[in-house]
Length: 133
Image 1 (tube, helix red, strand yellow):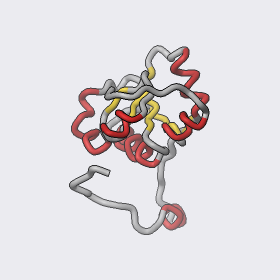
Image 2: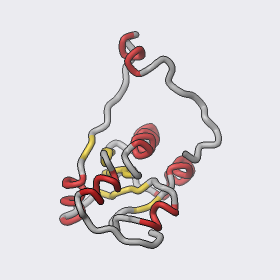
Image 3: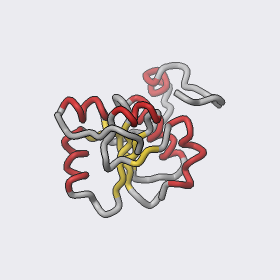
Image 4: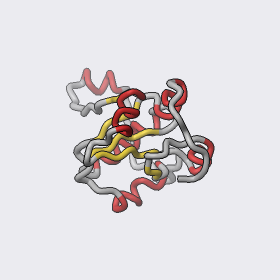
């Protein structure tokens, strides 16, 4: 997924982690209809952040989305405003969850996850554009 330097991972599983009494956070999720509504009437301080690769964005993109590749996100955080709310998207939601956790760890307080991401968007028949963002 573009990470060259892994500093850790969760072992045992999340279930075992919780059973051991360790705490963990949660992340709100939104669906394609919610994202479509936000794009139609964007909240004043909201941005859609697409963390897919350039080739994926070139094939299909949501015009309102800002692109920062997941593998470069930790180094690109200064390009983003931590006072804004972000909905993070990718191909299905998996990489977006990682990106959302990077944002949260960096102090971005208003972050949610577009579950299903571009796949859900296209399944709903919402418009996409080709070409780099």
